[in-house]
Amino acid sequence: MANNLASFSIHVDDVDRARAFYEAVFGWRFEPWGPPGFYVIHTGDEASPGIQGLMHKRQVPRAGTGLNGFECTIAVDDLDAVYTAVAANGGRITMERATIPTVGTLIRFDDPEGNDVGAMAYETQPHT
Image (cartoon, rainbow, N blue to C red; front, top):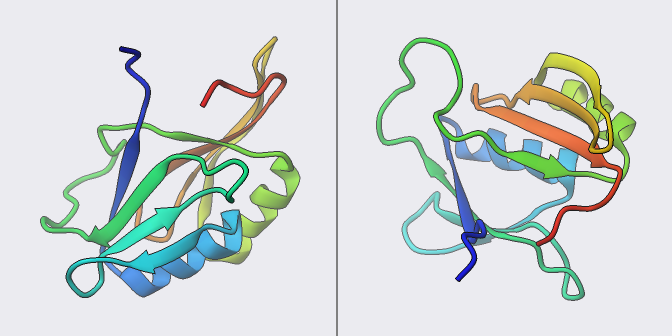
């Protein structure tokens, strides 16, 4: 069995603010599921469903600075549009565009909740 990523979870302080950010930046759809403030994230469409995501209120406040402990990078078609949308929707670019030869071009940013996220325009789309 392959060790493919099957699901991810975003822990946030302000669920409404984070939801609005990810809807605006990536066009993800959020479906209420379970307790109030808990969502299933639909990252793709019917033809290319992507990976199941979850978002809910952070149980323990973030302490200090640095990475989340789990780094994710989101494959995007238009890195310039994502870069602009991140800044326009309360995110903060933490790493300017960096080209990784034969892989693609990457940016890193903090979402409005302080989570570290990457977005990459891949030269060849990764296997999903």
